[in-house]
Image (cartoon, rainbow over all chains, first blue to last red; front, side):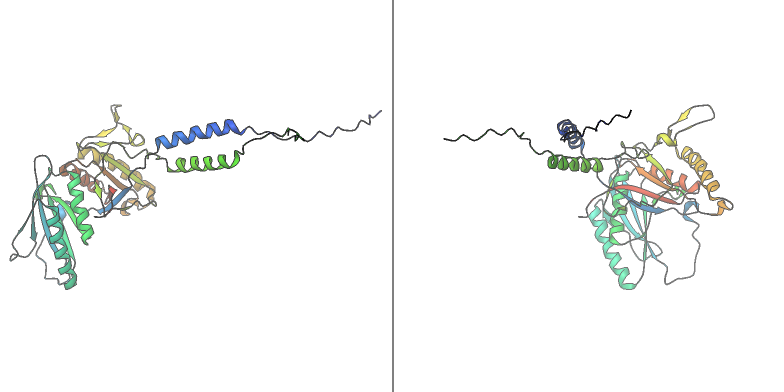
Length: 167
Length: 164
């Protein structure tokens, strides 16, 4: 025989979710992340395009081109410990322009390049900057000089060693 | 005098908004946590530059060269390899070794490019993370090695600073 027992309807039960252990764990996680939080300095990039040929190509006499960018050379000498000892600015293919001593002052370098950049803009010309760098100069100063030149407006910058045989 | 009946209801503080807030804080700190890129060596102290641009997230193939203050390239664990004598190579001490390493990678890039891959530009970008005290001679030697291996696209890494 089938039993006709009626199913018991359970009484209403309040669900008891234990929040306190969860809160404990969450606070521990929070404390961990707060203590280990150290915002890292943001890394940036300076894009370089390397020349295809060794030694920057062979310079041969070329016909005078009005649109050819004017090339400026800054020779950077270094101290034994890799700091800037002195800088000299020269203009390539311009025998009349005397080399200018920029001393070991990056501000001088920046001011003189800004002046050149303004002159080039007035003449509607572009400039190329070659940094002839002493082997001993450390990367921090190389990047500082490239950085200054980019900020002034030079887009064609070539850091090369002073000795042409090493290029 | 009438004395009010003592209520038997439980009095519990409401933890839910507090939990919400705390979980949001945990999420914030988790998202801001520095995930160390395996290929970027944390011992390399980079120079500062204001003109450096934000990193290009679209670079799919990159070869990291972490150069220490002595000009030695420290290879990431995933880039380390075993030479013919069975030695694990984890550092590249001179430009010739860098060139050999990069030529091997260039072969992979050419193979991945398919037929006529030799004529196409190599897909990988070289990421140069050079220590701020590394002499220029060493850096330039590595750049020349990149060029000899056929890699012409190079990124120099620096820490971003606000312009003066």
